[in-house]
Image (cartoon, rainbow, N blue to C red; front, side, top):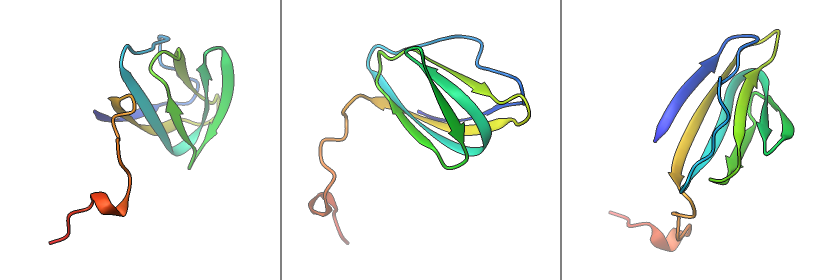
Length: 91
């Protein structure tokens, strides 16, 4: 699953969540904010990327002065078995 998400300045995702099987990859497209992952606060700004394990509890917040736009890619944990040029089929 791929989703595009926007939070206006001062807003947050209204719930903490985790997953059973799926990891998430977040890319910050614009703005600033923070993520709280397993009670650790991480500052976020344009260009940042996060990969979060399924069981980690997470919540996202926009800064008080700037909204934040981010993409979330959700996939089964460790589903990419090979990442090599040999995996490519040409032609």
